[in-house]
Length: 104
Image 1: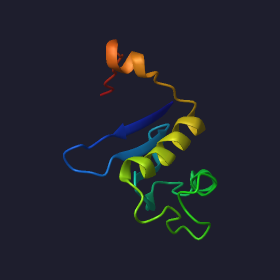
Image 2: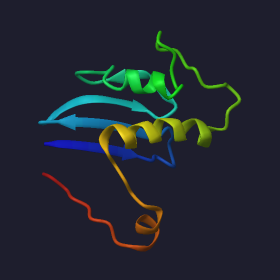
Image 3: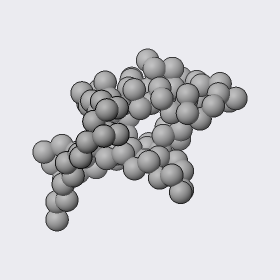
Image 4: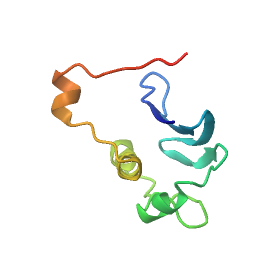
């Protein structure tokens, strides 16, 4: 079983991403703080982060310092969407009820 969790954290940025598989934390990081990654495989998305121009191969930031946060975050969110095959059409998010699951 796999789970993707994105906490937008509007009151206490940054937004947090995490990926779990079979009950283990595989990888996670703050959106905009991708240099600090954690989990059993913290570098799982490193190739995608490099390809998207978010990080350099040495793991340091590649985005311009003066880039607006919204633009910077879009690169990371897009690569997460592509890597995990996620799709939430804007109309569905804004106008329809989305399923939610709580696993205890």
